[in-house]
Amino acid sequence: MMKRALAGFAAASLIMAGCAQTVALAQAEPAAATEADVSVNLILIYSLQDGVTPEDFEAWVRDIDYPKMRGLARVDDFRTYRAERLLMGEGEPSVQYIEAFAITDLEGFIAEDMGGETIQSVMGQFMGFAEAPQFIVVDEVK
Image 1 (cartoon, rainbow, N blue to C red):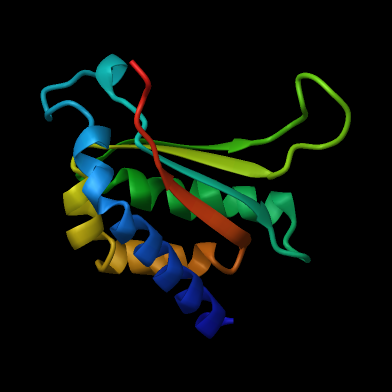
Image 2 (image 1 turned 90 degrees about the vertical axis):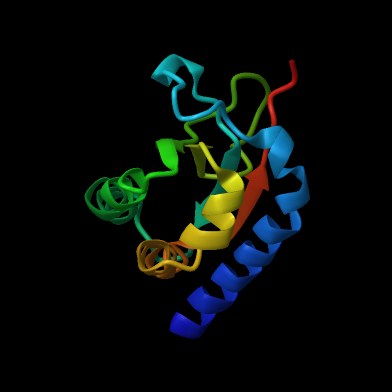
């Protein structure tokens, strides 16, 4: 399982590193920004692996993921959302969970924080829960 987690993390790191050229457009305002000014610039979408219960995963989010990731200096905001249902149409959402990050210095986050002990630990655990997560750098259309 650890090899799978590390392989997934390596893939995620490559995806994020490949997006580094677009980071300048996706960065939030300087550190003086207020909470209302913080812009989301990283989205994760994923479903849970077979055998992982939502209750176990969500307990991990509350107890481990939120405190560690929100404790990073470059993370202004981080929230995990459970996809409940489609607003229109039949069927189920294509993913079970969506995470939204507001990172003040995305380049620094990728270059320095991604390799750090906190993120390595969290990502190792996360990859044991998530099936094929996509890490998407975004920029608001203005």
